[in-house]
Length: 134
Image 1 (cartoon, rainbow, N blue to C red):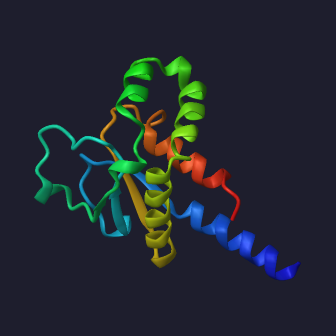
Image 2: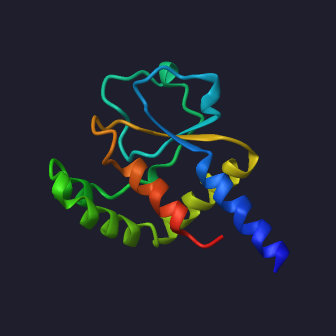
């Protein structure tokens, strides 16, 4: 039982150590491993300037899901639910596994392009990761 408790504590600590940041913000040494979690490359942003370590397109919500909820902040809960269903796909699960592999090595920052810093796919992804069983 003690070992399981330590394992759960370590899992929760790892999830707390995932940062979120707009891709347009300046990279910082505290970012750790920088992962873009959008399906499309941010408009007008050079790859060299972004300093992205990994681009996980398969972990991003589908284009159809984004279009369905774009500009509808009142539907946030429905978006999170639909996105969680998409994260069950084989491609998304492979991307989640890769993300968690980097997380075990140290701090990661999930990068997103959305202007809404409170309701975007990176926020929904982090919330989903925190709810997963260790």
